[in-house]
Image 1: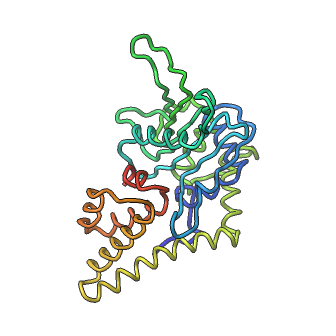
Image 2 (image 1 turned 180 degrees about the vertical axis):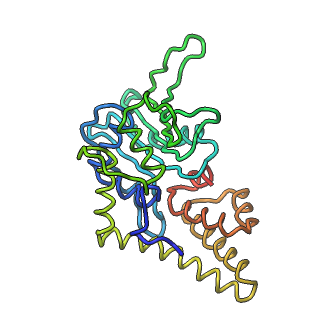
Image 3 (image 1 turned 60 degrees about the horizontal axis):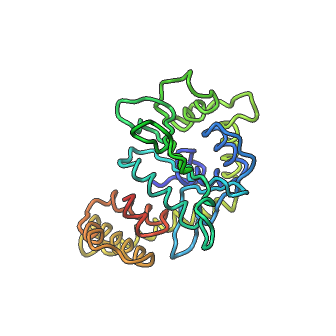
Length: 292
């Protein structure tokens, strides 16, 4: 049975993105995660949630400081994902795409921060809560001042004394929300997140948005069952998902032939369902291919 809105936690993509659309909540998270003073941010909501037939629903979080000196992309990764460093490269490029207008110099490009929140150790054999990367010169170790920062946060860290308590509490909260104990400090990030989640669960507007996503899944299930009357329920469900996926991706651009063949050859319904979710949460064919 699919989850209801009331059953969602911070670990669910929908709830995480919903919380982060609140500008103060997003600002508080970024300030805590990056350990820097951020006065205010704008959440680019059209890149966080897009509810229409052609663009689907995008669940990553994009924000920028109001003076546009810094831009941020936050990704929640609950299941282990390969190639995160190269994904970060793609996301940095995505942040830069619309930041430099014609006639502006490269010096006008804002600093970009790509942040992954991982419920796993992102690097084998290492157990830090936080990894911050920049480009460096291999000959002398000088940092390349290109304004690009990549941060990996991990719920599996062990260096408790080396990061701020508030950030460690937040990562423990992401790792196991059921064990959440409200901190005494009203300004604490975990307490603030949980309060926002409670507000979202009482909101009719958020309930309607969540139901829209559930309806999309139900439509795919019914399409699969209809085809399954002739070919068997499992095969029919898979074929229905494939057809819906290809039709939906066609609205975003030309599907590479190797990706089309990969979709057509896939028989596992769980994989196809994951790809359908991904198609709803990406803005382009390139992004889908990178993340599938």
